[in-house]
Length: 281
Length: 312
Image 1 (cartoon, helix red, strand yellow):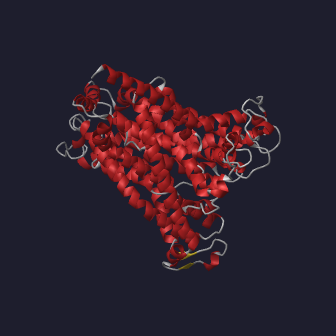
Image 2 (tube, rainbow over the protein chains, first blue to last red):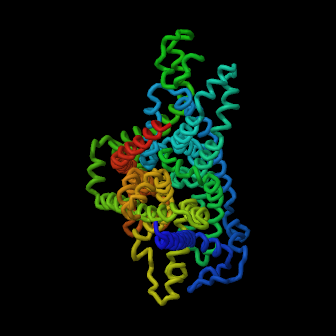
Image 3 (cartoon, helix red, strand yellow):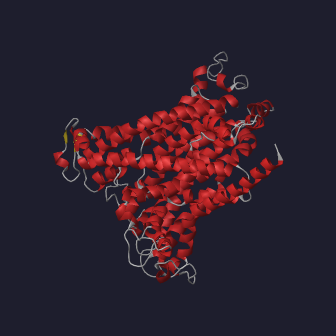
């Protein structure tokens, strides 16, 4: 390669780096603007042209958390936390043994079972919504957070089984065999050999299941009311405009998104794997 | 216990060790799987069967006594109803537009991020962020903060250059919904395609470069064929998620202005109109529609999966 070619390649390299930065900033701009607006007063938030340098205030957050009157978001935030955390725990409890039976000591035709789990994820949830609603109504389970826990568990179980199957498959069979020959029993093997290798993957799986449960709207909207309302349902209260309320909407959107942003960045490297149902590593 | 587990595939098909009895042993292997399997069948498969049954009944929840078996009448009604047909069309349009646009944008971004430059990790983080905003919150952000004709950011920025001040949502409702979804789904496509780019055979590319292949030739004849399956996977998974989209349609337009897609219509026909039979028939049609996509998706996943297993 001649000198000029190398130089040209380096120059286009930095040029494209700048383009990448520009694209990143462009995609992030709406979020940055949302964050900035949430710290403006309502009057400054609703100006045209936008007031970039207006003074900052916490009024939007005070409004959102209900000190200025209006419904408090805390019950909804707590409901969302319960639904997401408990359903994620249930998912792990069911998925771990299943993944074990699909990787370390696989059943016959284990790939077929794996694909059955995947296929349930591909059928639209809306098609099963009505029977679930009728069942809940007759069983007196409407507006009950535990119904959402069950549904979110079923929603995330296929994803978790796929992800954990691939993580457990990374544990070398020879190591497990060696431990067994040395006389270690199954619980010891699981705790000392399997867990250390699979734990980061299990953590990522949990974070991704948490995100999906936290985000869910359709089931929560149909099956909950006043008592078991989740955070996304609370947010739908902002769909129709209520005069000057931009700062409040921004504060609300940001607060509700924060747990997902945190979990998502923590699980960044495994995010694709979860979303592609384990197909892409 | 020790003899059968050396080769995992052979566990179930090795009946020569007859202590506890082969059948008991097979059940012991299956046992850890059963709770998850039974749970999934009960919670996801039974409701579908119920939906199918209800779809053959004329059943308005407000008149429960008038419930009766009508055969395929609901399907006839769904397929001939102009509103419902329109919502099928809207679903197709919304899904195709969002998937294609986010796939193309995602490919461009993935190619940009595939080469090293200063702050690559930071840019990656910035680009993932839209995907990590709660969908309802993202839809609210677009509806009120960006699209608002009087004080939204878009018109605010247009103001600086003396541009027009359009009412985005009422002029182009479907495009408004699509744009917000493209913003959220481009990061997803980018992540899948980036994973695809990074699994390329670097030696092969170096060899091609030494042989004098141009960047474009490398992209056209090496990168693109390798990416094909990742593009397919992104398109299929994106379709599966976006066909089901409810949050954006519900929040940005509330299904109005001709943006009601099938999930929204199903929701509306039983939650507001209490037409259980019709809603179920529409639901069954959604399932039939997604089975086509799902079958293709499963095929792509299984080909990637087999490659993965054989490599391991």
